[in-house]
Image (cartoon, rainbow, N blue to C red; front, side):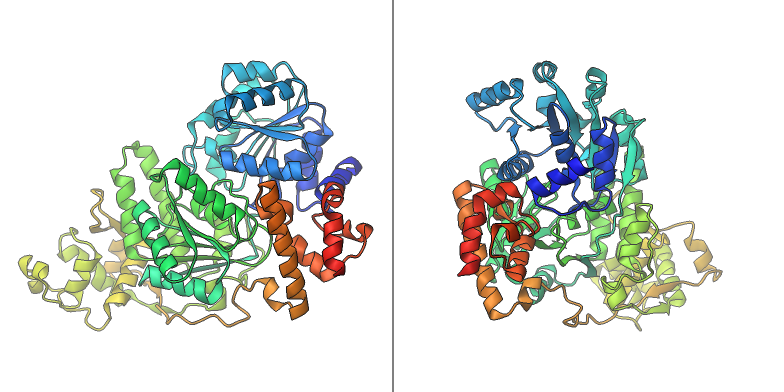
Length: 599
């Protein structure tokens, strides 16, 4: 490991490995296959970058996104590693030049898209050179049950067939047991060692709140907790991304939309601006985000419920990659459940896929409605036992919800579903329960049934919460036609007969988090002198990044700037003790940093 540690310190500027990095690097560098599951921000890239520098030959890295490849290559070039990217975005002359350098073995790592790698021409090309290893990033893309399924990934087993002696590493941040099995099968990794790191992200504060006025709730959340922070807001529809971005801009938040329906040039421009500039909020559909390695995203917000815990975990994991405090915030309501179920039923997928998608949606719904620690709930889903019952950094632990014996209210709700013929959604059922003489109630003569008006003692918002939780508990389901009608399940029979009590989460008033509970940017506690120094370093970093044509974090992460302010090194030897500064960056930037720090 002395060789690996030397590379880690001299090139990347880090004093020690984290978690299972050292074990993975030793295993891969010795020429053995492995599957690595490591949370976003856990340092997956180093697990193959360092072995690539230790082994003879060129490392081929398979990555699904052009922007991700470009940013990772830019970061490697900044620390003096010879890396390049080969994809469809390169002009023909540049692509030819890259291929010539590849044949001359002038690269340590080459990043390629799966479509390019799978061509016979490229496979024949790399067969002519010594290969250090194959790294398959975002390996969950191989799974049809994954949220980022890429058909091309299923053909990557050709690497095992054509190059059986070249070690392979498959990496992902998100994969449940079913997805892990499929990765192993599809990539022929039966003999690979599995490195499973903890899925816990203790720096992320998880919070899920009732949806009332989602745009206003989002604005309040950003203004009170993340003003001037970079963030991502996820919406279900393209129109909603446009509307929400416009709404935020009107209210003083710099926001950009991103969705698959935009012109490719504008979409790429918005993503590039988000990556390169600070304090930008991107409002996007799930088309945005896979492979985004911007470390200083301080929050990820969802205005609609994701379709699976895998998707939620992957998306929220884009916050706080630098290990600093960050927020995962979501508004959620009954219509989210109905809308997601409708999308599943109306899809043209096979029955087995629909069944699996429904189970994943139910798991996501259970996370939203849990009355126990959200972090423990997430870990349990991924097959990891939490070492705590209260994490102290989610809304449930900080503001524990009350539960109440809702058996009678539930019986009323279930009876109303039955009496109305299991043909109506929650809105109509609530009108019946509360005795509202709406046109629809009168036309259907539901004002004459026994359940009309028996729920007047509870407000409409409480009834909506009850119906939502009944779906989460499996006591109600939505109709198979996808129109949102609520239907009884087999489990509801015992409740109607009085053989089972039901306790539900009480809808509490939304309390403002106390200051110590709020995610706080560590920079906000600096004194004036330290803040001025930090501003000078950030200005220099921004100017340098523009000159080099790379995002600011490629020059130095915020954590490195913070350590420069704290330690105030005055010599190059002292600079080398700062995390994130290796010998190459010391040679390039040492004099500039010392000048700023001394002044």
